[in-house]
Image (cartoon, rainbow, N blue to C red):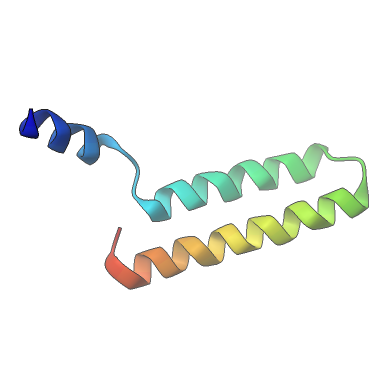
Length: 62
């Protein structure tokens, strides 16, 4: 059971990878979002996700 759990955890993306995936999705949404006010909010969220990814990498390497 412990080995199975270790394997599942190892297969998951790191926190930094997960934040970068979210940022990439937000960037894609901005390209198709016609409402500029909404796009500005997406840009802010994307930048926040990228900062969180950088912090996760710098903090503990995960």
